Length: 354
Image 1: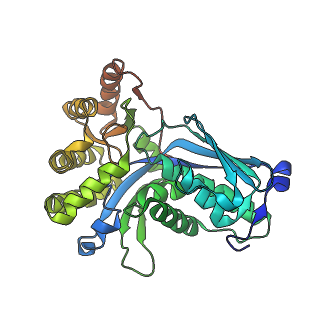
Image 2: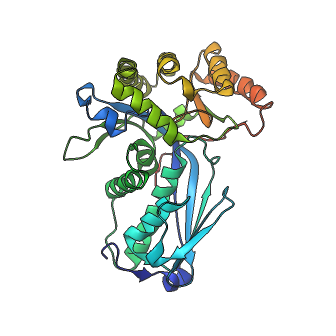
């Protein structure tokens, strides 16, 4: 099946509803996955390390009236529906309508349900897009279309999001959602063979060990990453913060090696080093509650940083298992006084899309 050939799914979904899901992530070295930063400095081997979390986003496709598409998402009061020839690409669910338009489907209802908080800086919209693409991929196979590989889905998801957003989107959120696990990503957008190189850092046993050595919390404050990222890129392009970003990149390469060696104490120290630089070059990423929690983590011998672009959202910590256990008690107490804030019960997700 070729894209944009209009095809109703209502009768197919009436017999066989389709579900798919993908994990969210925490990261170090994020923002380097944006082309405006990584392409000019490809000689520096731009990199990001991220950890997929089993706080999954689920997408369910069910039948709807032929010619129409309806989208709803838990956590959003508004639902949207429109006719197949007038799909909104600039609305709250515009990215998801664009994905459906790419496949040429109609006569379906999409429900999105996330196990992570809305706008929590854990890659939520990208994760939801990847889960939707996987569901549409399954539908395509049912009607005789080609089944896209993981790499194909990642390529499609990134370019859809980057195009609809008008540029300056990264790739790491979709990458973690597609592949799962714990990975180092090398960004090489100038390479015609592929925009990234994936380096898995831990096997299943190592991922289980890491799950006992990380802690994830939601600050109680939602965030909007696009505005924050634009400011960082502007400062990077002007040269104002570029040397700081280069120092961060070197630290992330060392962090990848420490995680691969399962040296959690060393990893904690490197995250502390990254945060020391981030406080200078990305101060707007920190709000009072996350700054306090990061300081508490460092006093316990752990390293902690904001997830994604910060400015609220979530943060995560890494350290020796005993240090993380002490930090869990400290963070739980601190978060108990903040409306909506809480520890997130999660582990490393080894699977990716399914």
